[in-house]
Image (cartoon, rainbow, N blue to C red):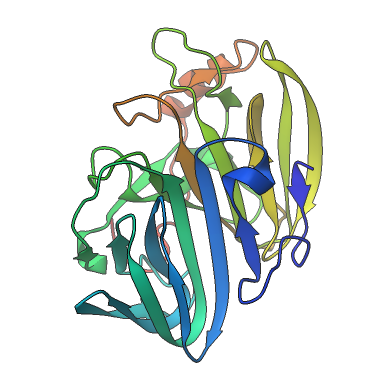
Length: 275
């Protein structure tokens, strides 16, 4: 199933649990917990982030503790976050909706805390393709083994993940990645369709807590319905030794990028703070 409505991937204590085995792939994962008291688990062979979507929490790991201030909502600006390496026992305590993007990993790195003020905010596109990207765990922003994650915020009526693109074939300038879209806000719509890797055909209405899996294929646009801002958390990982989010545009729509030069940026962005 490419589109997983909220509740269909729940397993106590997680309101969303996507693992490589449940997704039918090898590297990328995501858990979301609606925290109201302590939750304990082990990271096992996954590196992961602790990212407040709404609310705050304390992250106890081994002999240390991080206090995450969090945020009111995903539209309030970037959050601080914590990095948890493989083979680490973790205890979360607090109140709020907390996301844990993850990836199968082999390097045992140190736990780390990143304040919200260190998260780079980027405005991409223009006109009705203007969107905001919080690059909190992109390859150039944060070092880890395989995991990559960014947040994308799209004002109502705009399109993001556009032009449609893919990361599924080992071509020059293209990374092979498994990708998860986790949504808040909306309603909106997400498109995933066939590439040379194989047939796939999804056009899903997405609402808070929904997930769309992209094992291969062109993905985009992500469409925010007029009047409704859309958020998604992208989680990506793949087999390459060097982390990269390199992509290949659908040749039929690549020209769209050249049209942005003559269009103004959407003044509704950024959400939460200046870039």
